Image 1: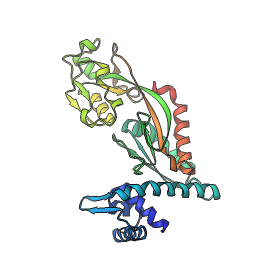
Image 2: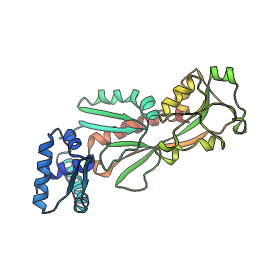
Image 3: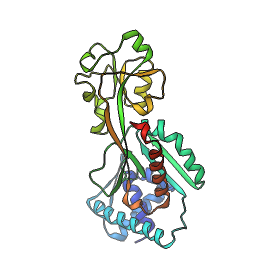
Image 4: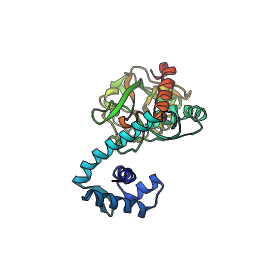
Length: 293
């Protein structure tokens, strides 16, 4: 059995399609398909069902995926142990993060990390979605909850707060409510409930039991821009909103408290580039901890 064939199988299993795996590996579609067939022939079983919409692992493929994951972890650990300085802080690290934290807070800071490590390529994917670390959709993920399952390494980054905000123009034209019971009649900007990626982000009822959004946006930054434009009241990340002079916090409402976690797959723990990025993010958060509350 050829390790390169196993590596290609892992890419196909994680991408869910041969074309996506080929792009990620820098190979052509035919080569990937041929190497999967060679692995199946070597093992004497069918691992992948090829479909018009992508690929699906057979039951044998699912079982072999666990073995392939362990093989990959062993290879990574062996390289780190036998040649600890050979890799250096180089290669590509993809970070998945919520758009608020990723765009407004993390993106302005990652340039320093790139300057410190010229051989490192950082990919920041700041979108309001969850990332599968087992499928390598990201190497590192910033999440709102500690993962309950999977072979993952997780550490709490920081607590943060959300508060009710309005634009100064809205406050002048429409006035502000005095508390949760006074919110009726005000235009409310919120999230799209069925697109919430985590139960921790379904928090409108904590701000006001009768919250009913008239304008729903799936992006936290989109909600903030709508509130700034006077579309209505909105529940915004305090560490972002307080930097905008055209926004005012609405008094008489509770602060909502949540947390960010930094998570990566345990097989990546020996990689210096992963540890360098994780350490950088942790240090940056620690230095700015007070701004999140």
